[in-house]
Amino acid sequence: MSETIDAATGPTIGVIGCGQMGAGISEVCARAGLNVVVVESTAASGVTGRRRLEASLRRAEQKGLIPSGEEILARIQIVDQLDAMADRDIVVEAIAEDEAAKVVVFQALDRIVASPKAILASNTSSIPIMKLAAATNRPSHVLGIHFFNPVPVLSLVELVPSLFTDDVVLGRAREFVQTRLGKHAIRSQDRAGFVVNALLVPYILSAIRMMESGFATAADIDEGMVRGCAHPQGPLALADLIGLDTTKAVADSLYQEFKEPLYSPPPLLARMVEAGLLGRKSGRGFYTYD
View 1 (cartoon, rainbow, N blue to C red):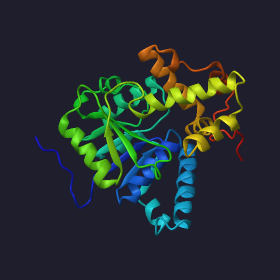
View 2 (cartoon, one colour; view 1 turned 90 degrees about the vertical axis):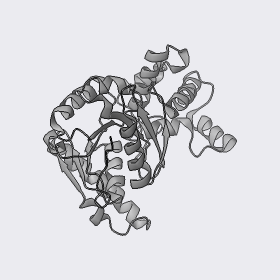
View 3 (cartoon, rainbow, N blue to C red; view 1 turned 120 degrees about the horizontal axis):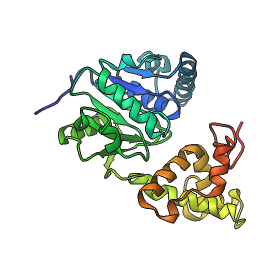
View 4 (tube, one colour; view 1 turned 135 degrees about the horizontal axis):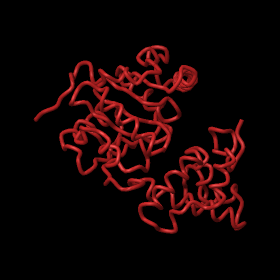
């Protein structure tokens, strides 16, 4: 059976969370001319999310990447009630990497989102999509749509169907990502870490172990990979950008699924997360930020 969206107006978009990833997803959808409603847990966090969006759009406008940040921002509404997702065609969950919390969100969306054809997607980077799909009565319409940070800059999106996801739904998700948003989609099996993080996180963890053992400093490790391997950014600076809490969450998920030592979070990473040293988002990680 065909499932289509009005080609003139495009799908209506819902985003759960307006943190670093949620704000980025909302921005690229609004840049594409789509109507976006974002749900944050409180009015105060919604204000913070709007400021994050304003700052990002201001930078893009100053660089000449967009004509008007205000016009794009006008397409985004931020609310603190999940009921606002009732009329959405595509909802992307982008809260913290907490499986129990995500399951609760998907159970609620299953009750709230009116259209049986609506896509319920997760931006998770590590949690099995099957577990989220099983929390709903519409598992054929649940899949992973995993963006990369910073969302307005990086072109890749991972599409992650579960064993239940309908091929038509996967096709609609690909059309949304590639045609509407102008991103490049790759498909991954529903395995912890998907394609990119299953390769990237062990690399980052190896760099942390190297620093932890005193083999080399953070600056020397990063400079070695930038100058010696032509990487745009070293692994420890990248971990700070991703967020050390997110890095640890992905590592925990990978280790739980595969039980391979290379996926186990090093003690230093665990202690830094416990101390609230989360990288750029907290002002300090392997480096210190203003």
